[in-house]
Image (cartoon, rainbow, N blue to C red; front, top):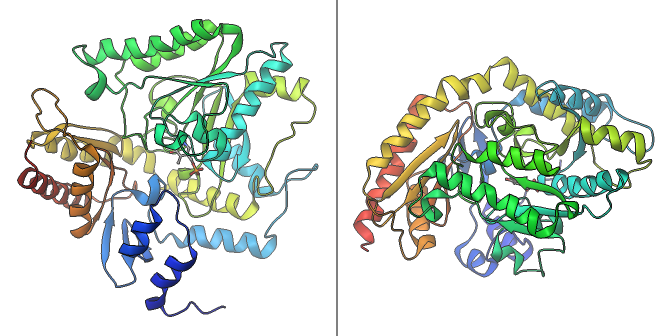
Length: 455
Ligand SMILES: *Cc1c(COP(=O)(O)O)cnc(C)c1O
């Protein structure tokens, strides 16, 4: 074993050598990074021994909680027997194959095949190429364009960031790439105006139809959306939204892609987010909850409609990753899914802790700086508002979100803020008392905002 250097040096070493994702390195190096050392259940501990309640499950992923030695042991056993072999040239390993079968056992009748990747970003790159080869194989080579949504998140690779609808990401690196356009998101609170949520849901869904008309149906391959937009602020669509999207995709012969990287594997109290909304996608990118983040693994679920054409017509698909279906990652994912099944964690999210969390969370809506408190399963958002009766937002959304988030952090609670929305996504194993503690800490953060910022 190599020895880790004395922990007191790590901050300086980090500043000298480590470029962090999604970080302002000048600010981070000046402030110093927090060093996380250990996790147990829903808690993490930093190198000074400080304990935090992680209400975000890492990055929406540690769904079975920290400290699951069974997952570590499954990976260890696999690494001793066979640490690596590829799935490229006529070979497979048992964990990769059995994981594909296990995943398919929880999807609807139409999604029976999995293509493995290492991440959600790669999963989005993968279906984009698949969608284009699918239409080409059917003699429609012009069906290449993709319609996505503003404020969506589909990853950080060139295609992933292009499919995503974050303007500030597009500005770095000349994105989006050609052939991708974005329509409005179903964000009623901020963008719904005088419409009811139901009317607004239909209106933004029909933007898809308008965009297809504008581009020409014969030029459009697919529409992609997260069942609930996650990084964009947990934007929960009105009930009218998804049925209308599904109708349009079906009638206009456009492939439907549900990005399940967050919603998949139980976060909404169903195995997949598209099941919650009762729609059938042609592709579903997955990652995060597949292994609860214990090891990196992702993939794309592919519908029979597409997979059958690819198998019958395509010949070689020139695409894949050295670590597609990595046996140790697949073994960890299989163990993670075994835990989810045997402990009934999805039922727990649907029937027990999810509703409990939902009630506690919604109690925050009474607070005078909260415009709405919404959740599905264990995925929640609090909209901060300067005037809740008129839905007027604070003039500096990022500042108010950061203020509440930092107050929570100082009080031992890890939350995330996207602009003026506070986001929660705890592990499925969170206890009632931990939900109560979380909500009370957030309430104090909201008091702090009310007492500090007047608009
Ligand atoms: C996190 C995320 C991704 C990207 O996954 P990575 O593993 O970080 O590449 C893609 N889509 C959604 C919806 C995500 O939340």
